[in-house]
Image (cartoon, rainbow, N blue to C red; front, top):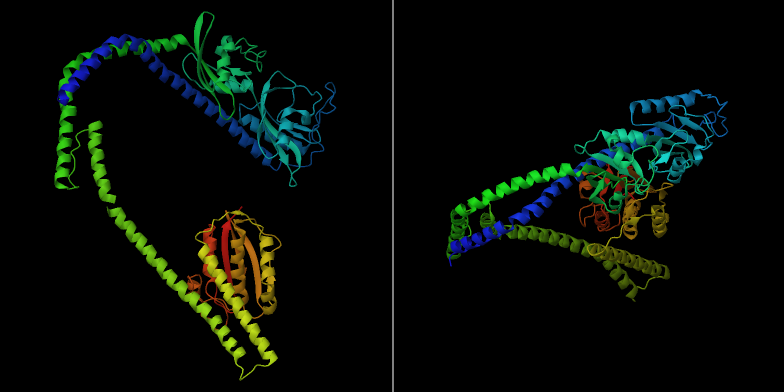
Length: 622
């Protein structure tokens, strides 16, 4: 059976099934599908409410940080500030000094410029209080015993937001944003705060619309009513008596589903009318933000959509039978036939550049496009492979060149002490010209020194070979302890060269691998002692540079020429200073170690005798 015939039969069966199930689909599925965008739209609007509310409260946090950093507010001279600890409401009088008045003016200006702010205030450890405007009643008041003060003192490094609480002197319910005042020794000596009443919050939220006829309600994470719009009073119990009371106490039991889930919707009936409640949980505040909407408004939208779907479905089924034959042949059978012909041509000729014609963007068109992409990908892969082979070949050549230099340096640096050992050994064996006891002692000591030098070279070669395989565990470094250990290890060289070592009393903390950092310092110090001039004066130090720390060592030697500066860290190369001992592995090893730890090495020198050189390396700051 041809594909065209199969498609016609399939379309006929599908059309019959659509006609049989149209009623059910329209009555249930379409209604559900239409409701989902409505639901998503309300949730998206609640996202916006949450964003606006969170942004508003976060802005208040930054404002409190600015107030807490203000030098006028941070004054420690608070002995004359207003104090209500023993206030008598009948006889109390304000006696405000110049410093307190300056703070009051600052707080009052903030309150004037931020209309949603109820009050700006400050409490001190001596019990004094400063406020943007006078209290309603001058009753006895100890700020240190208020929840906002205790919250800030318990979290001195952070800006904190209090749970909603009732004011002492009026029926307002406040949400405080507070920050502790901390001195240079980390001691808290006061708290600065900004209060927003739930009435202010209601005014702010009332400016945000999530749909005609809807009511916005806020509940905290315990289910207490925070605020709701005035037009929703009958539904939310919006009055002063019910604020901060549980939704159960307010008779709003349908909010149980709101408290049990992060977001979604629920339905309830009240006063003979049906309502939908769409709700969302603020991730930042933990509050529930709900929109209460009359169900009739939603049903009207859904019903209009269902009628439109019924009309469009009927027209579609009518046209379906007319277009099936034409569409099947034009859109399916012919493109597949062209795809088959092109594929056969590629198989027959083996020509990968032979494209398949793409005539549409449907599944068949995408199949043809994917086929073309596959062929092109295969072609790009023989190219990528060639490029990769060339890259690896170049890398291998560079490694081979480095290995040649490595082998040459190792052979050269091991040959000299080995030749000396052999020569001095022959002297000891020569019975015809026996050495005196003193000469034999000096010869044996020289052999020992040459052996130690060879051992040092071999140790560095082993370290160099192990750098590629070693696992780096970066940890905070105790640089003072590391430097102490290095100076102990190099004590003999330091004393023999009469070197003077100057180091700082403290070091900034960097991240690194202590055994490797120790090797870097040893190589740098060895060079400074060897090339630092007679009676070397060597200075060690560190400088913070943003997120990195630069450690440096400065000597008073002859310095380096520009040419020597360009070659000093070249792999396995030693500067031609024949009058000094040394081998060419130390600085390249130091460079590789530092780069493995995420840092860089450097050197500076003027080339002027006596001004010396400064070698450095960087590590990430802890």
